[in-house]
Amino acid sequence: MKLPIAVPSAGDRVQVSALSRREDLFAALDHAAVWQHIPGGAPETPEVMAERLSGAGRQPLLIDHTGTVLGTSSYLLDPADPGGIEIGATLLTPDAWGTGINSAAKALMIDAAFAAGAQWVQFRTDERNGRSAAAILKLPGAVEIASRREPHIVRSDGTVRTSRVFRIPLRPA
Image 1 (cartoon, one colour):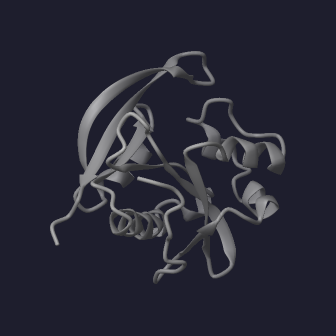
Image 2 (cartoon, helix red, strand yellow):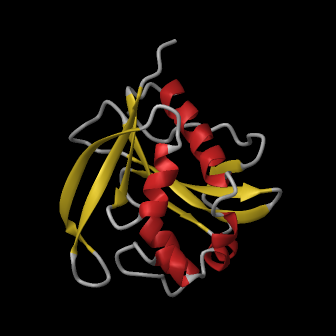
């Protein structure tokens, strides 16, 4: 897989686009609950947030609905497993939780990843984040494939994260 992946800009309920409008995104995500399972906690400025969301092997995207910024999600490459792509670092304002916005954004991203040649799409979440795991399992075809201790990810309470790993295999044509 190679980045960037072209994502259709809009679906029925949501628009996914290149990361922009940093100040609006920072304001949308300015809730302690959003950052609860994120190492390092909430960023102090829009610039720090943008820096944390960017980097090699990442394609951060903005999620909005009718012009209102709701959050972000990213494509993440794993050089050790190049046949697919991970969708992660998804952060949504609490106002969007439980509304179907996350599923709508993920559907656009999943379809674009398969169109770009991915053999699978992967998701990871902290084992403590039941809300995220439940949302992933609602995605068509998602199955849990592993539980992985990740010593490079230290939670804000100082414990090492264990991730639940899910995959959606390439859908037959």
